[in-house]
Amino acid sequence: MPYELKQIALSTKGFMPEDEGDALFAAAIDASRVVTAADFVEIGSYCGRSTVWLGAAARMSGVKLHAVDHHGGSEENQPGWEWHDESLVDPATGRLNTLPHFLATLDRAGLNDVVRPVVAESSSAASSWVQPISFVFIDGGHGREVARTDWTSWSPLLTSGATLAIHDVFEDERDGGQAPFEEIYLPAISAGFSEISRIGSLRVLRKS
Ligand code: MG
Image 1 (cartoon, protein in one colour):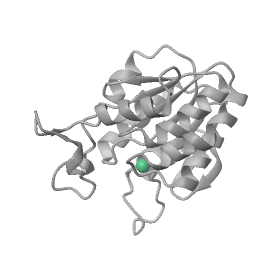
Image 2 (tube, rainbow, N blue to C red):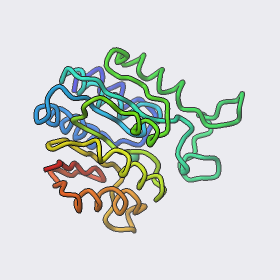
Image 3 (cartoon, rainbow, N blue to C red):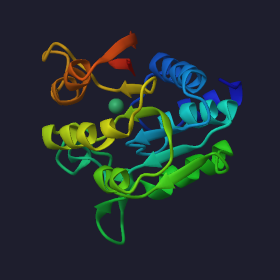
Image 4 (spheres, protein in one colour):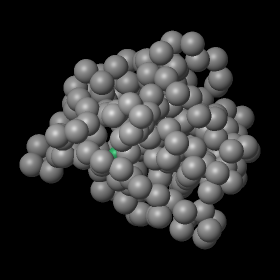
């Protein structure tokens, strides 16, 4: 990870810890060597913190990163919820809008040539997908329906050798919400993905 980009990632608002961001970067680089000439996809970009790690990996791998987010914030980001940030509310509408913050991050990082923002619901983006994919990172909403939809939308687009990274996976409910574990991780294991690495709440799986 280039030093300057790492500093930009660390200075960007978001929830990705440094060691997990570095692991995400390494996992994407590795994925592009297993399935070549295929793009990366990020589900849930928020203000672009993890996007910087993945965009740097995409540049080094010679592929694009499609960054999918409706930019209205997840359930847990809304007013009254634990992960709400008042500074992300658009004063004109009174609603959360992370898109300007996300675009500012891409500008600051100089990643506009490799990152393609996809402003859409995850399921809608997946339903019209055409590009081959080597790597998907799911870090979208953490509600059960949302997590389940991310899995059912994107898993059919992953071919043999493709890598699936999932954030906020907690096997123990005392550590965090169970939706990413029960609605994405476990179904992936049942579908024949095998775990190749883990750090913190990040799980990296590969389709056989
Ligand atoms: Mg996360």
